[in-house]
Image 1 (cartoon, one colour):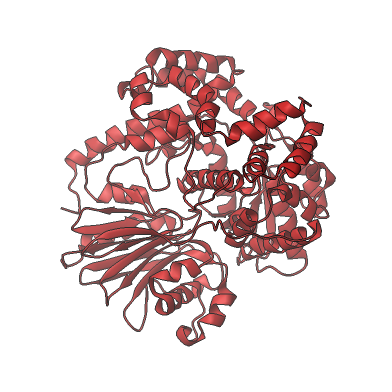
Image 2: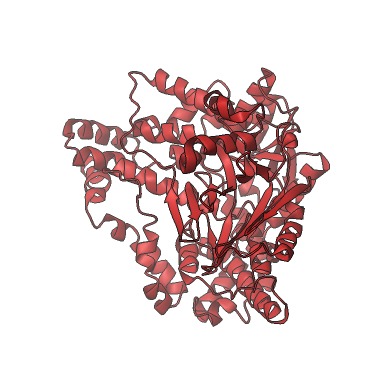
Length: 632
């Protein structure tokens, strides 16, 4: 992914060129293909390139329009052909992604961001209104942060660069910490009170008068797709999924794809292979990479990975957890800017990054998002509660009977009460989270739990799109939880590649939320439409799979292996000094980790990285006292 950044002084003061130069230098490691800078009056922008396709190598950024607009773009434009057709009078022969985005602004103004489909982060300057715009894609696949103090705004795709160069006091955002420990941080938060991400699907508009944030895309509660047959749904899904994968194969170097053995990664690999064999992709090759386990054999997925390799006729690169260990000291390196709960897998990601660099690869396909977009949970609650609230009693009766056939309970009235009536009651969410709240209350200090209202946070994000009924509200909640997880920057901070997620293709998301829920989850199977629509591409072992991988087994073994080091790490725990965690509960949790067979010790995944981050924050604060910030 390319890197962008800049500074805009609201009072008209000239650009601080020392700051701009230092910002560009700090981003150089993320953009090894050169770049450029722009400085005029009170505005300065920097760009560092990470090229992934032929068109990107033709770009000159920052791009300056004939009207002196300035644009820096880090992204991949997926609806290029549609936009080119609509913007013929604005392009002037330049069909690079950045030129198309600039032309979109010239035609549609600030509404241009809603026209863009793809992964992106951008900054755009309009000299006529003296307005800066910062925008980000709907799921937050690309990162973008900013700080504004009323006199100026500074921004960067790299949060660490802003922290190092801005010279501001770093205060802990405890709202972020509470969300981090209960679900995921909200997508408009960082761990620092005075640093903000551009929220996914939003545009930040900054002018001398004010800094405003507005949503540019969202799920549409009024949109419904209704076909007469399953076949029509399957054909529509297959075409959208094919588009989602194909546009991510737009690369002039081999594309890599994670192959875990799960349904999501397997469908992406099999579809990518089919597209490439038909000659419909730009990429010159496809390489699959799999994480495999010998010591933690219960986590090993080779029984599903190997059939996919046989189906596509291509052996995957296997990275053994025995060689690239989990829960190793290397994770400290990756928890300096944000507490990163997947940094315990840093050795794997480091090895993957190294192998990709050796082979000149820059694009990685990931199956993240499939479970959340197309429902992996075998939960009849949303459907049954909605039928009850809509008064569709005959249909409710039939669906309860269908769920009875596959339920362990087999009791018609128990299923109706538990999954139909109870979820429709106003107190459902609070009751649902009581068990989680009890567990967390034993670990975290009561004052922190109560003051930060853990009960409310455990309910997850509220529906912001206006769905009236349980199915839409639950799908909205699940989608927003995923956006929180992806946009937090956990994966982006661990791998030096353009990581992209076909299941987050915007047209596919919109389709998934507009079709009936029984196309996605049925009593006999979850992810139903995926299995049906792609049945011919998948090996039967994967298509018929009903379970999920046991990653937790490998993690628990890692904790047991590293118990002594973890015990030393938490001897003078900052998570206790900051009054987040009860010391005695933390000691018990670390002792559980020694056994390697207690899932409750998985809470350490969050506490280890939070501990590292708090220590790094104290070090950064100490260093700031003796350095001279470039901004005053």
